[in-house]
Length: 358
Image 1 (cartoon, rainbow, N blue to C red):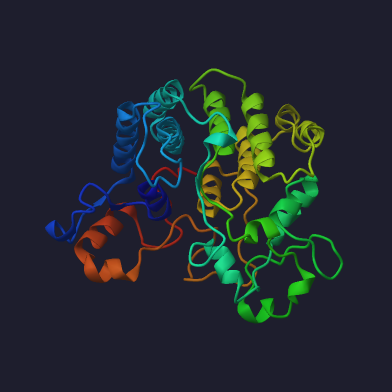
Image 2 (cartoon, helix red, strand yellow):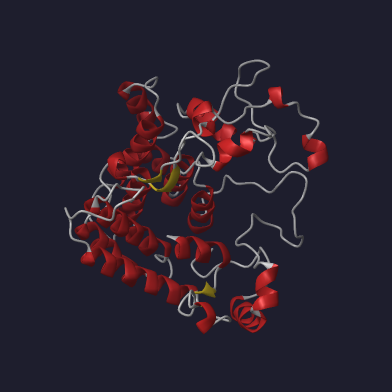
């Protein structure tokens, strides 16, 4: 999970020679193809080695020692990794997609891989801890406007109405500090009480994402099934996980069947499958920001915008394609860093990672 997140952010990173401590303090940077081949093989081997129904380790705060759920998590991560490389290595992707499905991926929200924070300091959620001393974060107009246009019931689960007039208003994305200070906090929507709760869980991976991945796998011809069914399941799973009881099953059914959301209607109206799947997947990935950004880069469904008041680090004319390497890497592992930059391209935000083909 960690190596996958890191390579999706930076591209080439130390992998085969990483974590060796004093044995190798200047590990080489591996290509993303090498990393993803390694990750997929590791996840396959991990899944095969797990004895379902066995008692797992004591102190397991993710699944309480339930090894069947750990096996599903391994297979679901394998499915995600396979879809990452679908545009570069489709045959290998198809092989691992079907292997993961056969071995068993998430089938409900009960399988979600969550980190359970507690209500007391220092084990409360970092967002809750930060909120104790500052409340100047706000909802982005980009997400709020999308949810409002769709009449999405998750709006109230993600954000709170403004104090001033009780409506949902997002702050303009990407303002500098001086401009942003002109907007009173009470004039824009803040994060919801659910998100700010001390025990709101950290999300490693959830069932909704798996359903969207399965929809894409069917659309690409990697596996059998019905795209719209998996798409609808993904939306429904997301809504059910966030639901506080105020949204009924009928409300969810009506939303999925609306012209603004219905899969067949949108495809018939000229949207591409990447745009349709990507938009709803992005909404469902709220509070999984890196995943949302990764899927934006991979599926090219639009929506994200350049910051209103300019771009940090300069030189970029698009939503960033990657992170720049930390300065520590240039100082402490310069030779390997330099080799990686030469092989990958300039160490700037505009340089796409390997799997980002468009």
